[in-house]
Length: 387
Ligand SMILES: [Zn+2]
Image 1 (spheres, helix red, strand yellow):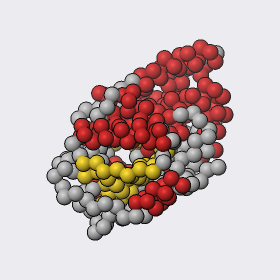
Image 2 (cartoon, rainbow, N blue to C red):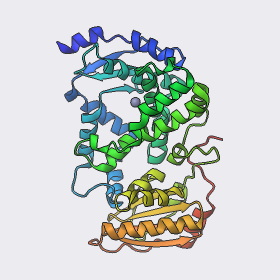
Image 3 (cartoon, rainbow, N blue to C red):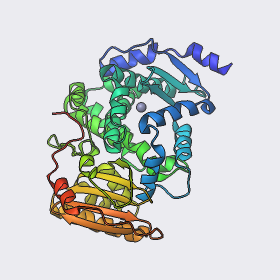
Image 4 (tube, helix red, strand yellow):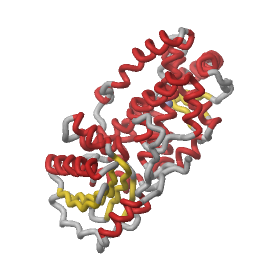
C-alpha cells in the first residue's frame, strides 16, 4: 500500500521548477518515477554492474586483489552489491530514462525533494550527452569512468546544495561564501559514514561526489553556469583533470602499450587504468596521507594487467624522472608494508612493476622489457578523443 501511496504523491512538478530556477535550463517534469522497497533493488544493481564490467567483473576483482586493493577471500561482487544496496536512496537510470526512489521517505520531506532535484539533474545531463552511451564507452577504464562520474555527480551535488538552501537567490559573494560552507563536509573523510565494506569500493563510491563537487563548484565560482556548461564541451577523461584545474592536462592511455606485455606461459586476463586517485588510495593504505598525495601527484598514465596465476604487471609513467623515482620509492614502501613481492624496471619517467604474492611461485620476467618501456616513454595515445 505504501508503494501506491508514494507513487500517487510523488510529483516532479515542484522539484523540476526548483531545478529550472537554480540551473536555468528547462527540465522534464513528466519522467516516469517509481518507488521500490530496498529489498527489490538487487536486479537494478546487478544490471548496473553488468553495464560497468560486462561479464568481466570477476577478472577485474581478481586484478584488484592482485594489487591488494581488495582483501582475499571475500566475495567482491556480493560486497559491492551490498554496499550499493545499503547506500542508494534514489537513482536515475540512463538506460530507460526513469527515476527510482527507494521507499521510506516521507513524500513531504525536504530530503526527498532534494533527492529528486539531484536525480532530475542527471536527467538533464542525459539529454545533453546521452549518459548511457558515454558511461558504457568508458567501461574497462576505471580512471576515465570515475572522471566522467565526477562531472555528473559534482554537478548534481552542486545543484542540490544551491537548491537546498535557496543559495541561488543570494548575491554572488554571499552565495559563494555559503556554498563553501555547505560543501565543506565533502572535503573531509566520509568513509566512516559507510558501514562494513571494502574500503577500496567505498573510496570509488565517494570520490565522484567529493572530487567532483570541488571540480564543478570551482568552475561555477569562476564563471557561473556557462563555465560548468563548458566542462561538457571537453568531458574530463582522467581523475588528474578533475583534481587539478589545469587546461593543459591530456589524459594518457597506456593500455595499448600494456597490450604488448607478455609473461612467458601466462595468459593476460584483463587490463585497467587506476589513475592518480587509484595510486593515491593505494599509497595511502600504507603511507602517511601527504606522502601518498605527493607520490601520486606525478601520475602520467598507468595500465595494470592481470596474468593467469595471480601476478599483476603495472605499467606506469610519471611527469618527470624525479616523479618516477618518488613513485618507485612509494611503491617499494607500500610493497614492504603489504608483504608482497615487487620487481621493477625503469626507463626515464616510466616504470614497470610486477607484483606477486610471496606464497605464489615467482612469475617469469616480462618479455622484451626494453621495447615496452621505450614505447611507454614515447606513447602519445590518449584515453579520450577530446581536443
Ligand atoms: Zn547522482
